[in-house]
Image 1 (cartoon, one colour):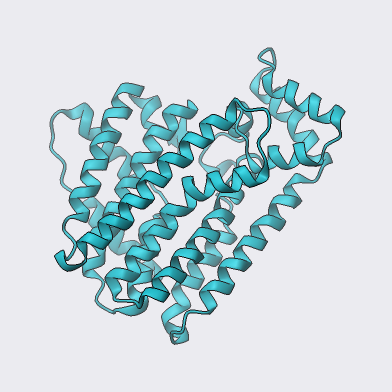
Image 2: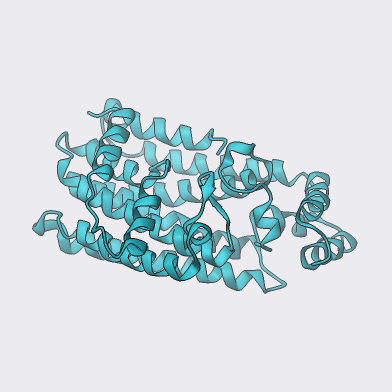
Length: 323
């Protein structure tokens, strides 16, 4: 069995060995810039951990893990364009450092690279891996579209939000887990359980991301209050709208739309309303609820404890993260 730090080290080494053409420079340099940023590597780590739960020989899972990481980074390039996000992982986003056209094209190239790495997996498992990869890929796109749709809709429910983040965030985590289990030779029932575990873990992860966007520390890697500035229908916003009086809902809606306020003033005023309605505490409650559901599913997987220890450890790291 591999330890978490061993798998992370393996991933970082393999990412550094990815060979990209030197030209055209403005196509490939942003890809290298993105892949070599200090990301958490959560999704490829989960894929490798899932494979390792069933098989000590995980080398054949590395190619799929790289495909997942490249695809995830592609989504970040395009996401930053759509959000006008200047920072990613504490440094300029590809969109900000180069421009939107370059970020679009480099992102497109990354999807092709992801499939190239996936194609290196064992041929006897490639069809089912492609099916799972395509499922998560289209899910992410659907979730992103809902996210953009909700920015201009007046009435978005918590249920709408959960469906959106299930697609945008959870299916990539869940799909990575299932792909790892498939490569490791897990029974179908366990593959499905790991997928369901990943869905709930991903929901908890995204609600936590929403909370950290406003209540995180300066090491979060993105500007504090970015969701407020961009008009996102985050969990915090939707919970505030759900709990607020009609008068405060109107105030909140006007603050979101007020273009005369500078960003910091807008963030301060909206945070004051969030604090009044205890939306941070509501977020923490939801995070713990979904994490508990994820843990309950994971505990039904019938494997020796030592085979599950590292996955539990990574899950706890995600629950307790501050960035």
